[in-house]
Image 1: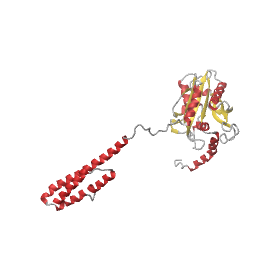
Image 2: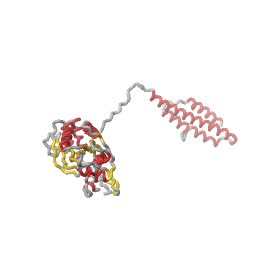
Image 3: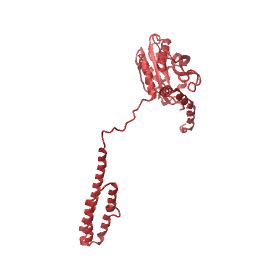
Image 4: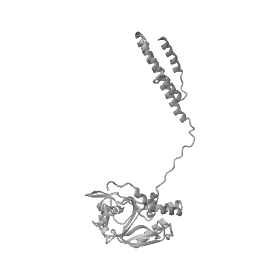
Length: 353
């Protein structure tokens, strides 16, 4: 009994004098005194040799000894933790921090902003509308008959069929809402995202960006349309670009046309981007159909107007990349477009089909 108490006194002095130099030394202290085979555990085992009348006092002594070791361990652990934290604040705060890379706008956003800026200088204002639309504003008011292919569920994302609620297939719904809610003159530009139920490939996606324009007033003619778009093309693509109009058909315009520009990459000689034609189709346009004006409460006998729409702003990225790198680099990108499309063959099958 006396020998055990003497050992406890010696170990207590060792514990009180202990100062951990690092985490490893503290771990060795824990193993020595508080481990499964440690000193505290071993001394506790001496309880069986203690006389019955002394067991209570010995138990109190052992509990105090164990508490001493645990308190010392916790104190040293906190001291080491505080020292590690404190050392971080002892660094030279005048040193420069780690630089953060500055972000930039997405190229599609840059193209959109550039288009909007050009038309704003022509007194067009930006108009926006809902991406979830009803049948009237997306189809019927635009003179699309009931059996038009665009209404088919294979081409349009329907959220419900009764009533018909869908993801807009163009930003023309914004034009309809503007004509319903405002009296002429109306001069707006409508940028936004649109959705089509199309197979994703190197040349198409199920959603993309469009910019549409509308001008309604008295005595607006096709000549106004051509001059407006001529100005836009020269501002957007440069003075040297060539332009041509081709007759076309759209249910919401009459007459209708498609506008092409000479390929900026091959200068009209033919390349992979322009499909060897030397021309790039950039937009559709035409005079607003009288039925569309009537559907929106505008008298077609008094007012006329033109509309245009350009999609696939991603194609404009080629011009942006060319500005940032070189034409040769864009040629290499265009050469790999068909190969990228082949990767779609390895996409997982849609089990819902």
